Image (cartoon, rainbow, N blue to C red; front, side, top):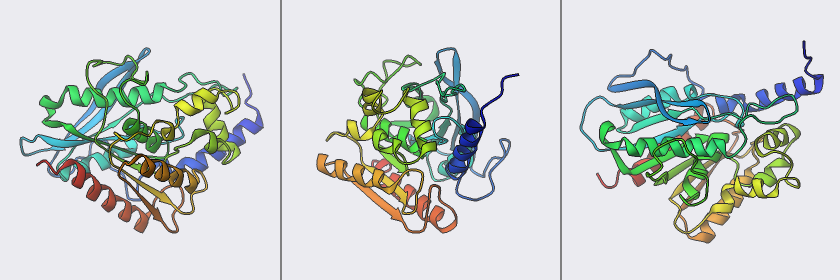
Length: 311
């Protein structure tokens, strides 16, 4: 039997501890897969594409009444690109549906590294899958009563990073992948980022556990893989045609430093892109109680303003 080195076990435990809050929700009891909120229709385990030999699935929630077309939100889970699953946002998509959105929470290929931190699914698999989910939703807009020109994206931590990438990476950046619906745009019209990384090279220096996540995702250190770190950094792709974006970040975040949000805010403003940064005092990496309520209210106020204005 292969023994995993003690240092690797300790590192994995440290990573799990760091990511526990971001992989969980807002601190409330989570819905079971068979629980459905009033006024909501849910479809589970919908195949939206394929990555290598992996079937990619999502869960979808929509309003039970009305013909739409409804604005839509794609939720992207966190977990350091290594852990977590779409169930993180199972109740969030239902609450979004109660507010008049079609919402999906999508699985994507996790890095799944071996004992040497060599990933089975390195970057850009994750953003290719997230883009595939957006393309699938837009391609099926008529069936699900979605307004195809009013789709937003949101997520926390690694999911925040991928949501930002959905916003700033255009269709010509060679990050679309071959998951399906290649003739459909993957652009989104609004983004809400919860404490997601924006500059991967700087993030690498945050802590040893975070460095290991970065190296597993990108195949080495920033010195070894400078192009990969740049390509995977939302801040690299900022341009004037990016969609309005809201970033929420805890002042006491020890996993993804607040600097990541501040640098991105500067870049977006310099490019002339509407960007709002809300810093939540007392919050770390993951929002609970009052911080969670503040974040959710800000999220829907933002999406309502940018995705429902055409209604």
